[in-house]
Length: 234
Length: 330
Image 1 (tube, rainbow over the protein chains, first blue to last red):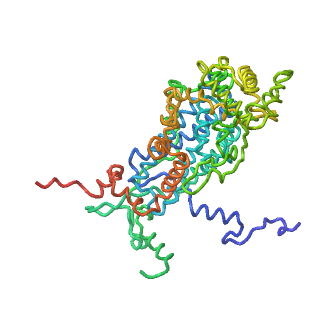
Image 2 (cartoon, chains in turn yellow, red; image 1 turned 90 degrees about the horizontal axis):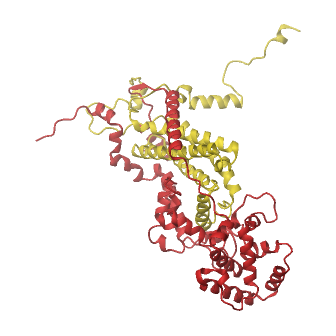
Image 3 (spheres, helix red, strand yellow; image 1 turned 90 degrees about the vertical axis):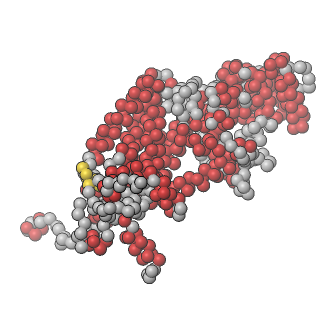
């Protein structure tokens, strides 16, 4: 065997041509590591109201974790077991807190008009996450398999049937609702939340509205020409 | 302005200060630490709330419980299932194609467009088929034959007369019904009540033609046609006109996030309309669309700037940019 035969085959240095390399380069360009996991934030991100975003994520993760434990034992577990009832209670309260934190986060982002500066899709995914959360929680109430779920199902069927949805989404079918609750809707919700978070990291936190009649220029707003000439400082 | 609309749009985006990379002051931020602290705080809060308040778990109402607790209501409901006058029998899609049934959203008959995909024949599914499963009861077999061989008009006369008689009986007691020409209906009802009280009907309504069953459409529709389920719910403030969809049994918080959906059912014209559900769902669909598309709706997207709450959120930033406030002029 000659040395040339045993040597690793390498191509010339240059732009990567494989699909994988293309995807990686696009992903890194869109969301470089320092943006994905930042260790600095703009100074204006200095209000307690920002905490409610991460609290919502924490409550969502706890709802997933408690729901996973209930799923391991089965939907009848908590009716006859004190430990099962405790985990069901954890699931209930994590969902209540999830909505509480999410609604505050939602109002805060509304008051900040957080869709400004090409952040419209971030808002859209957040709003869709809220609607998907309502659906996920609703199916959760349907699969409690107690009196409340019986009553909610018999009432809700009229709304869904009235617009023709009940023929495909039958709230009286426990099996269908259980699968929606433990698989389809959580996967959709997790995907929406992930998309929302990626966009938040990519676009950054929306800056304040320009101050009216400011005595000094807004330090963060840099005109494109000034930016090109290197006039901005951090 | 010159250039194509697309170029003008991109130029406008580049000029939008909110779209620019932030080049002002920054501060330290630990994303991972913040998430872990949030997980611990919310976890402790959840454990405390779960330990202190637990969660609701009222036992479900079985057909057996209904038949024992309210035999009059059970029989009165079963008669309407038999003669096709119950709520389910005249519901329309997706359970049956009752003439004229189904809500409409303006000119759109959305309920009928959904089609009949979960067919329910109340007489057969709730009464006759379960009774045919009863073994070794020649009297019942004879009554079933008499019923099925009678013309539809006669069946209706028997069932209607018996239903009226049960309603007039003291306390609605099926055992105290005045004598009359009811054909085999009293016997059918007595046997169905017995089947219900033993719990056999619970299984028969769910497991028709199959072993594994997860679809509770039929027993829930049967229960909902009676008044026992609703009376129990109303006693817990769960009725539709009691903001029921967002309430929970006992004192636990329910689906408070459904407040707006529930709200419409409390006010006219929704509270008095035959198409209330379709109207509320249509309205909520429009409002949801507005909510999702808010950033793209002129006027609404500019509202936060005028509300001024952002000045509270970013008060430190504005204090820095605008400088100290001048004393008020006298």
